[in-house]
Length: 176
Image 1 (tube, helix red, strand yellow):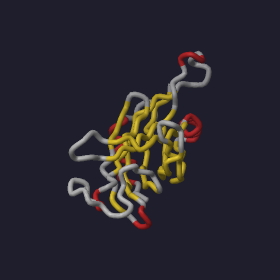
Image 2 (tube, rainbow, N blue to C red; image 1 turned 180 degrees about the horizontal axis):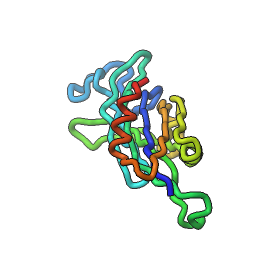
Image 3 (cartoon, rainbow, N blue to C red; image 1 turned 90 degrees about the horizontal axis):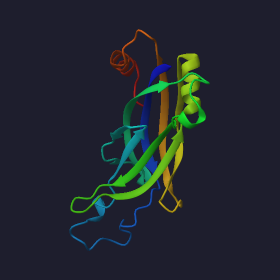
């Protein structure tokens, strides 16, 4: 059994649809146009969950987070578990729209399978996937837009503490 830290850098989003976004001007004083879309993301790996802040408006209608999350990972050696016991090695990104006076709205979801990243990270000690776009889909599986994400896996040695590795690695890295 190997251990490590999965670092996820949520960069930005592009084109994610919002059914309530104003197009011809907003007459509703409770929902002015400048505040129509306030996306945030719930990032989940296994039973660990992290929430992003609300994205800031960028150029060309993009919303920018530039926010890093870390997850503790245990990765079994090959052949150690049976097929029915294999964990699901995936990151789930649920994009939500923040509302002040009503329930937050689900805008879509992206899933990234990270088994190969973990495997290569266990083998090499560290493995990184630079930021790239991932498709966000709605409940009915229609395309909603894209999120950009970078992923890094850092293997932790037997005597190392996960908390100390998080601190030292985060200090050594800069955000994109």
